Image (cartoon, rainbow, N blue to C red; front, side, top):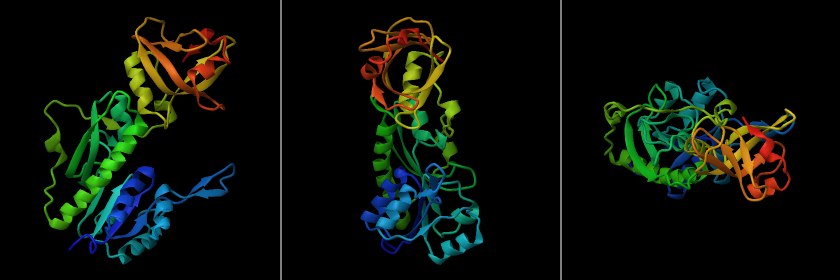
Length: 322
């Protein structure tokens, strides 16, 4: 068997998955169909349906697209079987039931954007940066019952630089992941895969950190942390889904603020208090040192650099970050 005869079904949804699908298609791997999420209702009344990034790309290159609401649906399973697939490749999709991942004779592989077994879960790129790690990477593994726990096939690393954020690491890992997936498929074709159980990669005494899904309640900035911790938190969530805080005005009203970029400054200010020269900087007190906000967005307003923001807020030093 070679890559032109190996029949692959690709499963994924967001932009990250498109990079891997595109690499498979452009390098002449035999992708016979794509499975992705149903179109998402958009607009004021949900009257406009937005297809996933993967669907848009798949249609542009003429690939059949399946969009099951339920992965155990008999009609979907029957459709899946008609493709007589040898291997399934999953990137940023949903948790698959065994009836799906066990269907192809060569199994189902997943690409995960972390150095497994660290950061199992929905948001591995973000959490690696939030925790201040100096490296991350991608892992391919065979799917099994529990999420992100299957035996590892390949793993590659990249550094996390001080200037990186979630966007830059996302783009680097998408490119790296495309190469690792192709290498993994080549290994499977050649019969040279030797999967390694994840428990063998856990150093004695180490702590495995999860990568839970990000919601509004776990993306709020806690000013009781140190400036360094807050800086990592903000860049780990920038530009999406974005760290946020609430600024309380002297009259008691408040407004939500998304924070996209910061730097750490030496200093000693009361936690949550603001200081500014009203021209070039806005500092916020933390448990240790000071956060200088460089780029933000008030609710209902456009994203702006701090100098633009300060021109319209002469009383900012009287506000409090909460």
